[in-house]
Figure 1: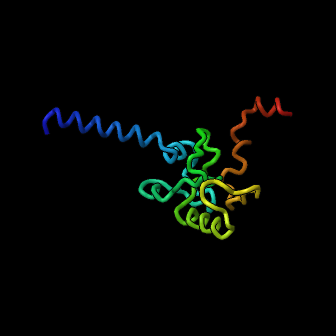
Figure 2: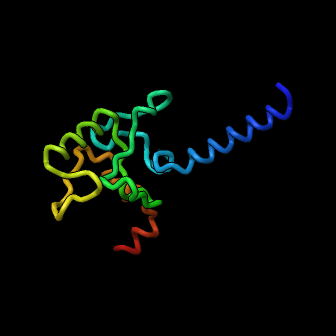
Figure 3: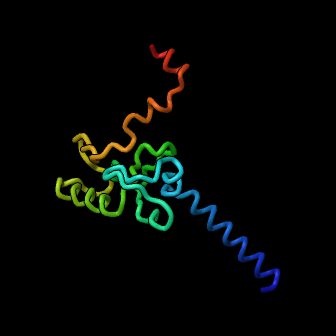
Length: 126
């Protein structure tokens, strides 16, 4: 492969990698442990592709940088969650009415805040 083609290929790969890093899935994978937030299964390696991003409010355009609208779910739990939403009569596009959202089940991050709060912050809170 000549240098010109090699350089163009490398530039293309870098561009694709940068674009992928900007997606909400990649952001969610950086923010959260690779655990299904519903069933608690852990994912790594080639099985990581089975972990999907669920938009809690159903609006795929609502992608806050803190990930507050996302839940990492395995393919099976994600399918089940959307099936459950359809059974409840919740439409697509983020309109859920005033009904409170039901918990996804397993609380993968229960107690995480307490683990992350420093001793200084704990003493200030008391």
